[in-house]
Image (cartoon, rainbow, N blue to C red; front, side):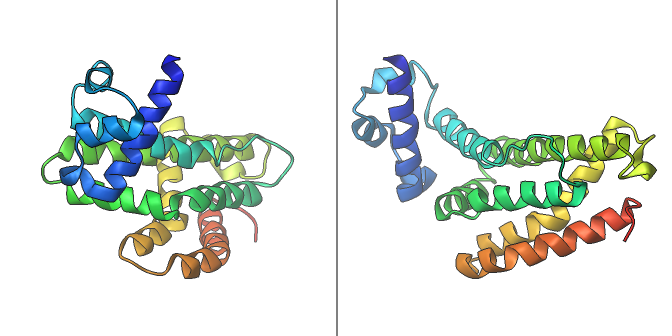
Length: 204
């Protein structure tokens, strides 16, 4: 089935890129690892860069799909913290960090890919956070945000990601022990969330 072939190609490409980096990976090796032919891969992707871009998009989507939250009776602080902590569970995986390092290493050659990866990651998380903030404003939990426009809510959401998510991801990228970061994540996210919400007019 086509779906099985697509999954095999994506899984194999992810493994090979992580093992070899972008430069060291080849379509030949990916095809062999996937149990597929080169023409099969080229019928789906124009080349190695397009396949790498698909792998990056898939991994970014996995970070946010795994953190998908339903709107429920929890308060805004708990919902924000739960979303970011669930994101971090995937984002701090060794494979995800290794893939991000490859993107950074290739940024000079493929600036469009690096920029698209960063923007996609930021936007997906910000959209969910903006929805949480909007509902909190509508229910009276964050009355100061009631008249805030959607674009401004997105900008606030991005600022929250910069506070709560990005520092731990950056520390992982520069080689800090993932186990230590995981142990510190709950406290970091809690403090960042309290600081952010105070700026949004939330009561102490």
